[in-house]
Image 1 (cartoon, rainbow, N blue to C red):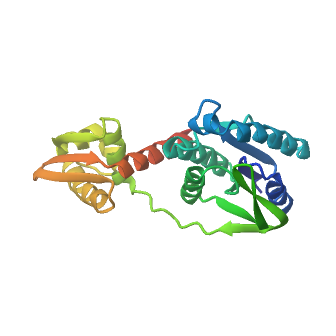
Image 2: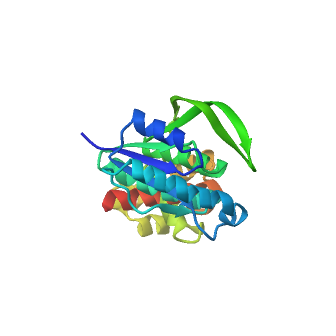
Image 3: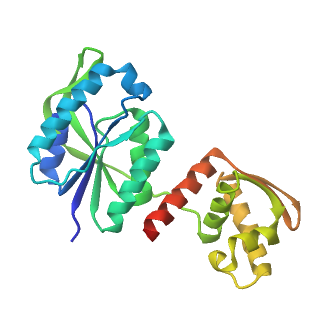
Length: 253
């Protein structure tokens, strides 16, 4: 049986984290906090100082729990935060550990990144409700009775199939834009990676793949001729290509 691993984006309300630990005793805890030079940290120095105290308190409560060095991110940068969380979630899931990410603390961007990463890696996300919220300086903090953790429903995200994924990776590594013959792309990706036995089969497979990727909003494209494509990754496509890249790296590590 695997271990229970918590990912905790730090916030000033330590009682809600303590309740999460009480309900799901952890073997390992990752703390996530803002980089000291991030825009968030610069704008909110008082909160950053308070989070150091919260981290110390939580560490003192978990003397027997493995706690790696905190993960630092610019929590208002979705891509940076999302890829950081996804990589650690996938690594822990590869070891068959149960991963719980808290969406109590952190910025809204970080919360969205955590939920998206959890949906791809098949992890769980929890929120802890308080019965009252009051202003404190420039923040609104939970007060009073702390409720039980509430599991956030995670909707699965469909990942591109093999040939679609290979085309996304190929485009990512070529500057996110290609204007090439299909035979050329097939030979560059390779028959084995596409799961085909001939170049002709590869051309047919790629034709279906780019149409599916276009339907899903990952590429914008035009077929210049029957055998030549001009395609470009959308912003969503770039993100999905990075997701596939991280999944492959973790799988092969």
